[in-house]
Length: 308
Image 1 (spheres, helix red, strand yellow):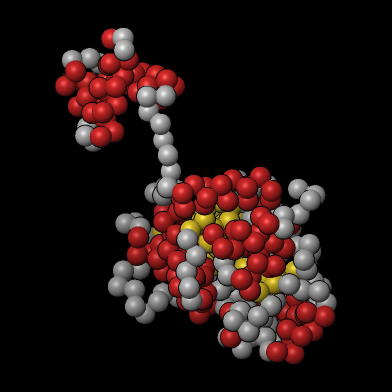
Image 2: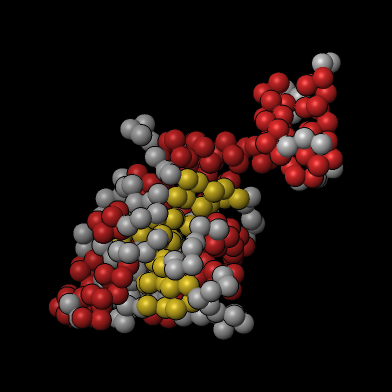
């Protein structure tokens, strides 16, 4: 072992095993911090330092990489699967709020979509951030954007579309969309740093079904039209193409064409019932980032579309 190799070994030991900072190592060994950095890099290249991830962590990293490659995503974040549906939503929302909080600056504005998981993300974020966060709703349906009554701290300034999610008629929906207050909120959304959207399944657990906005007959009709799920309450087929229906005409929601123009759209969804809907959203190229669990990710990559 030559002198420089001995130096590399000592630097690696102090830094990785004794938890010393690079500056501490430099002072201990009487060399410069720049020299420490270079020795650490040379130690890595020489194989003195070798990194090994835990097997479960390695498999999730591989899933993230495969999701990104197969579906053209900018990023993916995969967490361990939970057992119950409520735990799944809570876990995804918790991971998403931490992921987002690390990417916000002092004057951040984010868009939030409709649904249970985005609502949880909003409440989590509003308790994590130190400064008030500006949030813009991407749909009507005010109640899903309001603070959770269990939140003790809610640092969020909400800019909500002041309408229901579904109007009583096509004409009423058109009139609401043309209201000045509604158009102003929509314009604000185009300047947001990122957008958070949920993905709904054609399942009785879907928020839009549980809330009573759509009934079982509506779901049967949409299923007959080829719908596999929804984004911002816009129903799409397995290729991610919008399903045109009378319900679509009454919907107060950011159009899917406009969603594609927004920056950093983050999809937050997981669960066996949502796999087909998530895949459709990915095929439709509506998402830049996907936050999901390993069980869902495995299903998504095991049957990835050939045309990507």
